[in-house]
Length: 568
Image: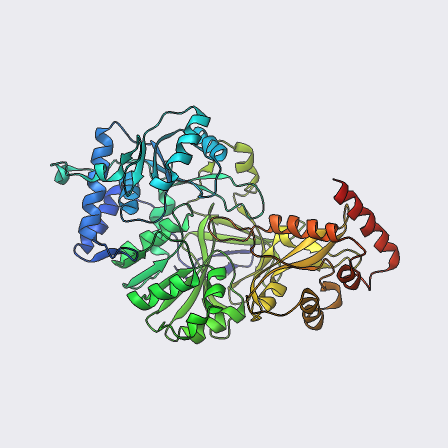
């Protein structure tokens, strides 16, 4: 991680130091085992659920034994191993064993249907599956659907015809002779991850060993106790795990999904020093009453990823984590980490730096490169990037421009100090019906999420006709909130320009649709809001109030579109 420089002639931003070239003779598996050996008797991970500890020596030995036993079973270089598993004691050794064999891991989303899993297994040519006992039946159904016959290894026990993962960790007698497979770090696929699916169908992303190898220098995690709830099927799991082992830190693991109470309990019990977290988890923790009585003084570093944290959330986080420095990272599954910020106590994103080997440009709607303080699409090029969208040459080609820059779909700009500012997602910005003004949801969301009545919020556009779009808010209220939908509308009306009022409505729901990694799926929220709007109809008193200042002739268009939508 270095700094940022701007070339006025080319209008390109890049890191201030030349990127280090990858040694073609480097073997990722050897590198991994050497790091584990270096930290020896230090504790690598603690299972919060059971109290089981594993040292780096034990992690290294299990990695070698798993690799050797898998090789004895006939698995070999470049084989693909699918995973459908929560964080458990032996997950990390099996993943590391895969890397030492020069194989590819294929983490599956926990919410996939049997049909989706079947398609994935066939597309990736999976050779073995590692899953939890609870997922065994689903995997069997998917295998039947795909007509594939591959062995299933189960974590934490055996069921039916599965083979327990523990059988791969038995002594081989020649662990000291193990040599990692020396593959091609630039072109061999280390992992196949799925994109988040927040704005469209998920894609299988194949990225090379070089991407995870170079991630070792991105985070300056201090040696300590680390916590993250992200599952293996999110690519950040690898970056987080590798950053921890580079520093000889201890990861706290749990098989359970995030809850505010559990996170706060783990931090206090284990004296966590490094917290790796997404904005929605930050917000949920701050709105939990336990945050006021939990000792969070041990936390020294917080890294925010997976979205932008509002200034209000950042300010509140500093209030309850008095000894922490908060940073935020920007990246996508396809491109890895690209930019890191320090978040100051006023909630501002400042002191940003480009990650090593990254070049960026900002491009306007006409394809022209922008100078500082001018918004456009953020386009990025890394020295080492994804290999392809698996078996999808069309999607791969469409993801890059003719200069090899990845089209992120994010809108933003660099300021004169070289700090990147992200305004919104390109797909999220829309023109408001009748007012013909561009509208970006993020500012309104940042305001609403700070309200004590709001647990979660998503601002979307609802479609009232072919081209007519109106902003709407879909809100998960806190249990003690008494504020009505009309009340939220009036709050927004008092804080935002008239053109941005929530004429598409305010709707309360019990939960927002999310990806397995916790990101809100905007397109599904928009579909939900649009459906509610049309079901209520133009004569609903609240909707009448929302669109009262739109000329009467436009009401007819909305009414007609509602009838058409209901008929469908």
